[in-house]
Every structure is written in C-alpha cells, then in structure tokens.
Image (cartoon, rainbow, N blue to C red; front, top):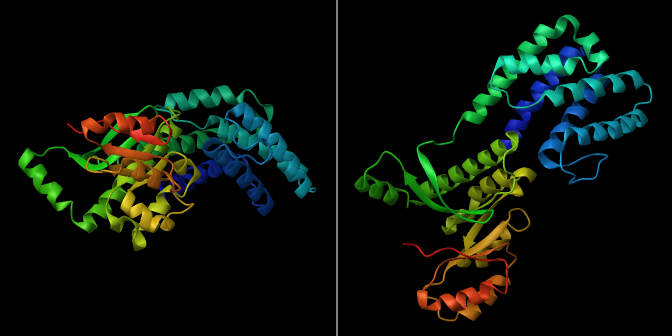
Length: 337
C-alpha cells in the first residue's frame, strides 16, 4: 500500500504533466522524459527541499526553483546535446505550470491567475493560443480534485488525544469518541483493548497525522510542528504491522515530522525492528520507579530522540525535573488529572 505522500505525489505529478502535455504536445519520448524531469524536480524541491543543482535543504521558493531550473537546463543540455530547443522550451512550460500550482477556491481565481502569468512570457502566450480553454478546464479539474482530497478528514468520528510542549505534539493512544455517552465510551474503550483493533487504531492515528502534515505543507501552513505517537502494545513491532508503520513514515516529509515512542520494555527488547528507519522515542510511567537514576541512565543510553515521562509521584517531582535539566531529550508530561 502506498503511503499518503506517495499517493498525493502520483495524483499531483500526473496532472502537472498532463497540463504540460496540453501546452507542449510532443510525442517524442525524449521530450516527455524532459518534462517529467522538470515536474518531478519541482515536487522534490517544494516538498522535500531536495534539488539537483541548488544546495539541498535550501528553503523552497519559486525564485529558488527558477535558479534550480537554470542549473537543471545546463545538466539536460550536457546529457542531450541534440535537444537544445526542447530543453529550453520545456523549462518555460514546466516553470509556468508549477508557478501556477497552489490551492484555489474558485474558478475565477484560477482564470485570473493564468491570465496574469501568461502575459509574462511571450513564448507561453504563443503556445497557449487556442489551447487556452482546454488548459484552464483541466487546471480547474485538478484544483477541484485536490481541494476535495485536502478537505477530507480521515475517520472524522474521532479526535486525537494530544498534549503539546512547544513545537512537539505527543499523541496518546486514546480515542476522544464523539456522539457517545459515558457508558458507551467505556464499552468502546474496552473493545479497543483487543490487540487487532489496537493495531488498526494505531495505523489510523498515524495516517491521520501523516495526512495533516501533508495538508499543512500543501496549504503552506506552520511547518514547525512535530508529532510523536505513544504506542504501548508489544504487538506494535510484530510482523506486518511494523512494516505498515515504516510504510507510513517512509517518506522524507513525514519522517521529518512524525515519530513513534515505545515503552521502555518494548524498546529495549525490540529496538532493532525500527532501527534507522523510524524516529524512535521512549516513554515511561515513573510513578512506581524506585531507582530513578538507574532508570534514566538505562533509557537515555538507548538510541532515542526523546525520553517522555508520562507520570510520576508529586514527591519525586524535584528529582525528575533535575534530570530533565541535564538532558534536553527528556520531556515531562503534566500529571494526569
């Protein structure tokens, strides 16, 4: 199964390439490959800050993309010395289409934007010609489908239970179930203790967060938030389920912002399952831990991003905080009420 970003990329690049082929209707395989290279380059730059000629990690902007396309043009000319005309023309086509790419609510917005951008390049004015209506129609079709995708909400009948500390959001494996009274919520939570349902619930939540990360990126919203899901069932790392987790976060956009935390018992025994493939953290209820120093030293010796303390006795608060002051990987969640 494709992860969410893979699916979105296939949708988006398909339509951007389709728009490019409306403007540049060449059946020459080399021209198709060149257009694909430009479009894929745009997607990698916008979503991952990965470039072929500009330094990787450079914040994306269309000024940077223009610079990247200039460098890519040089590379393509070196690789295809007999295709000078196609490479130069397709660079203009790809940049024009990608520069239009965004989230628009009305057809009027789309038509106005296209009109404004067309006048900036004489070559685009010429090749658009009598293809304009078809181009606008297809662009509107793409925009409608994209809005529909981004307006959807995975499993809208539940909300995530989360706690935020600065730019880090920690998600518990508890449903805040809507539309149910207290008695029914208790029954539902009992059912969710079933191992198979727990696994499905975990995937549900991870997919929901991955979708939010993708949506925020598309809408150019806050890109600073990071997420960690607390997974407390040993079965979480067994068999195909571990593969499903890897599949969700096996994307540079998602992996940069979404990680999982395992209990210390699970992490200690099964850390190798996710080693170097998933951002791992550890969590532990410290309420009944007597030898705090030993527990902290043991957990912090593991290859983890964060050690999340979920609970502790009030009288041990000073000791717990003193450890947190010595290592910025330690996160202390507020006591449950």
